[in-house]
Image (cartoon, rainbow, N blue to C red):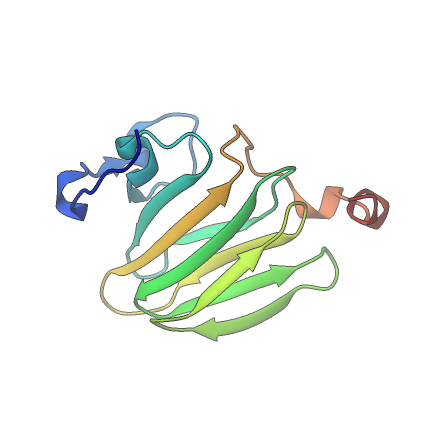
Length: 139
């Protein structure tokens, strides 16, 4: 594929609550999968009030987020050094590999976040409290 253009509505919504071993129970549009991307994950995440992606880290993947709609409470940083902040539409945030991050939707309607992760590896969430500073500093 040299290039491709798709409309968001052309990507079916996946209900993660129907997939047994995949938390969290949110709706997503797997944009990158639909487009056949192999070097990054690109996903639209949909949040109802109170829903969240728990504080976690990845071994290899760097993640970039962009708030499209709604207000979010972020928890970011190394274990023991976490910071909490509030963001709204138009905000970007990023987490490098092995750095903890998570966000909770605190708005009243539906919240939407665009997430881009690279490299596109199977990199399930790790407990940031189990990663020591030496592992991070070796990078």
